[in-house]
Length: 128
Image 1 (cartoon, one colour):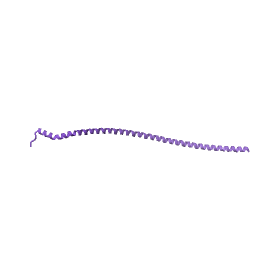
Image 2 (image 1 turned 90 degrees about the vertical axis):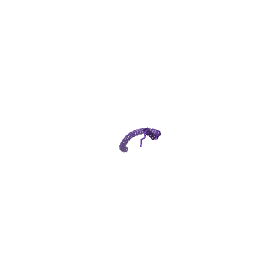
Image 3 (image 1 turned 120 degrees about the vertical axis):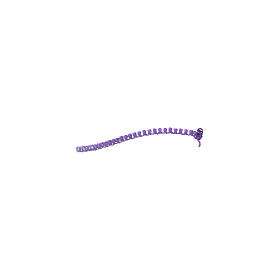
């Protein structure tokens, strides 16, 4: 078996590779389209990543604000509780003072009634 001369081998190689080269040329627009789509997907993904990061930042700030609001609500609740307790104590003190005044007034009325009764008896005994 003899080997083909180099020029013939080259020609045969071109003939064998020609359909492959034609297919590659046909695929080139598809490959460009695929690359274009990949770049578009990358850009879209980057935009979504940016949006996700923005949302994460907003949620973090919202959580901080919510924590602060909870702290303020707790403070207001404590102040309200203390205020209600103070008002209750003041009311109890006023009720006790009113009770004492009422007792003193009853004693005074009883003494005055006794003095009036004494005056009435003295007046009756002086009139006789």
